[in-house]
Image (tube, rainbow over all chains, first blue to last red; front, side, top):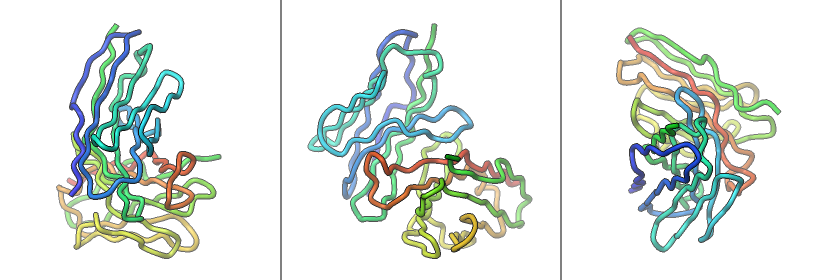
Length: 111
Length: 117
């Protein structure tokens, strides 16, 4: 089976740094994705990791450790507009390209 | 380049009616995925289609649900005899190829919010 865990909610202050963790146990692994989803809107792609290490893209970075089944999304210089749900998703290895999502972490940025 | 299009954005049906949800993938994308998101839950994979083929429907309920992606026109997710438990947001995503790399990830449409009365 597939099991993807992330905290349900987090709160952080504008201008600060926040790290959102994701752990996974899946029957196969072929990449981990992070998406941002504002309430009532579509998930939008943030990052993709398939090899161990850190991928940096502006204020957002994502880290992967395959041996630990662990990833995190790091958001720097938080802005109010970063208040959203952050979805961790793992693609399995069976060739169908399906994504298995965690329940998402709802981040609230406060002034 | 237009993104993934879904319509309708909101759909209200009474129990027992049929719901038809449409998805037009991004230009140049030939792979379509349907996901369901229940309130306060994560996205759950339903079905993966290419043109005229269902590749993986392991997430589809065995009854009342069907999906197609014809040679011409949008992908359709069809729910027959809807029940209240079908109320959810249904998202469609598309990708150019199955083996997603950084450039070939799944891009989501705005979703159809189905409410069954």
